[in-house]
Length: 427
Image (cartoon, rainbow, N blue to C red):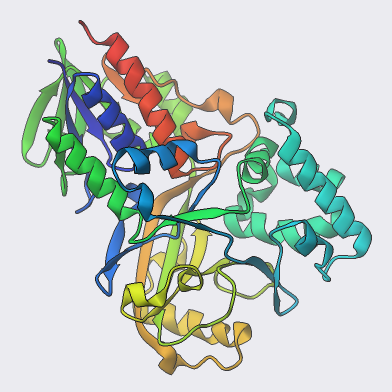
C-alpha cells in the first residue's frame, strides 16, 4: 500500500485525500489549524458552526453538492434566493436578477439595458478563451459602458484587488458571472460539517488527519519524500501539497533556482479580513450587500441571519463585514477593539437607528492567502501540478483559474490531481 501525504485540509486537500484513499492509498493529511476546512473552517456561535469567512454554493457547484450527498449530509443543504444587493448613493438596492437590474435607479435606463445584455451574453458564452489577453476593466468599459463600470463594477473590483484592479484578467470576471446562479445553497449547521464528515470518512478508510501540525519541510531523499513537522520526519511515496505557491517554494528543498524565481513572481495574493458581529436585532434586510459607496472601511456586508434563522445561533443576528487587503494593511495589526471603533460608526450609514449597544459579541479573523491576483496571462504562469521534485505534486486555489476560488472547483481539482498521483504510483 502506498503512503501519500496531503498538506492542507481545505476543500482541495480533503477531497483529494478521500479520492486517494478510495484508490487504495494510505493517506496522512497535515493541517496547521485545529480543525479541517481551510478558508471554510468554522467556529461555534450558540452551539452551531459558523464559517469564519462567509460562504455559499450555487446550483452549478455540482461536485460539492455530490459530496454532501455521498457523505449523508444532503438534507442539510438549504436552497433559496436570499436578497443580494448593492449599497449605492446611500441606499441598499437589489441587483440579483433581470427585473432588479431594470429597476436599478442609480443607472440610466440605457445603461441598465446595456449592462443586462452584457451579463446575459457572459452567461451564454461557454468558455473564456476569447477573453484571454483582455483585462476585466477594458472589457467592462467597452461592453457594459463607462456608466455601469463607474457605478457598479469599479468600486467592487477596486475594493477587492486594490492597486491590482487594472491588471485583473477578463476570464476571471467571466467566471464570476457565468458560474453563478440566482439560487444559493448553505448547509444548516455550517460548512464545517462537510469537513468533519470528510475527516471521519478518511479515518474509516484507515487514513489519518493530523491537526495542529504545520509543515516545516518537504525533501526528496532516495526513493521517498520526507515531510518534516515539529514532531519529526516521516517518509511517503508521494505528496500532494495544497498550500499557496509561495509557501510551497519556501518549505520545499531541491527545487531548481529558475523554477523558484519564476513562480515566486507569479504567486501574489490579496489577504482577507473579517469582522463578525453578533447583534441582538436585525441590521438591514438583504443577505449580501456589495458596498459601492466610498468611505466605508469594508467592501462587503453579509447578514447571514437574513437567510439562516437566528435561532440556530442562540438568537444572535450575524453580520460579516469583509475586506480584501494587501498583507501589510494596518487592519492586520490593529486590536479587535480598535477595529470595532473604526467599523461600527459606519453601520449608522446603513441603518440610522444602529447603536453600539446592539453588539453582543464580535470576532475578527484574517487569512493571508485568500485571493490570487489573477492578471492577464495568469494561466501560462501557473506552476505544473507535477513539480521538479519527484513524487511531489502542487495544486492550490490558484489552479482553479479561471473559476473563482471556491469549494466546488477546489474539490474537483483535488480529485483530479489525486487521480494523477494514483496513476503515477508504482503498482
